[in-house]
Length: 162
Image (cartoon, rainbow, N blue to C red; front, side):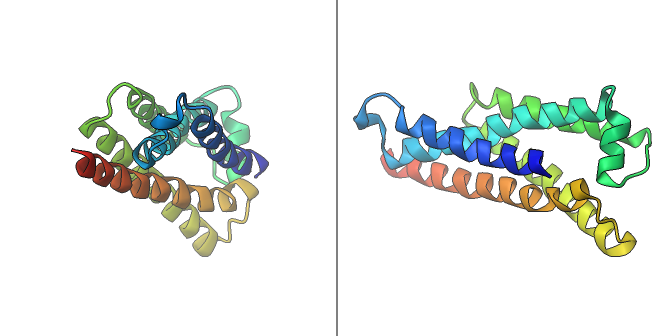
């Protein structure tokens, strides 16, 4: 539970600090601020996704499954690699801003909103109130939602500057 909250707040804090220390004041345009926040939610979120994926496939995989209230299963291995794949796409968006950034946001949205639906179904259908099942729902919804909104603002800002 605490890990989920701290990592989400960490993305917000990192984006805020990066915005405040971003070179010359002339660079602090609305478009640049949106770009920095988008990068943190996609690339920083990608690093967190990779960490989560490694936790699903690593030596602590049984404890992770237990903390979510899920049965230990070979599917956890597949979920871990899906998280790692989305994380790599997110990190690569640091150097690939064009349509690659759009693809990264789509991947995050599909994976995390799908995760959120799964966690909600587990909660409702199976009364799974394990902390890591319940507490991931807000961030599984908010992180991609924020990334989608930032991507839209970023694309609109880029067009208006041209």
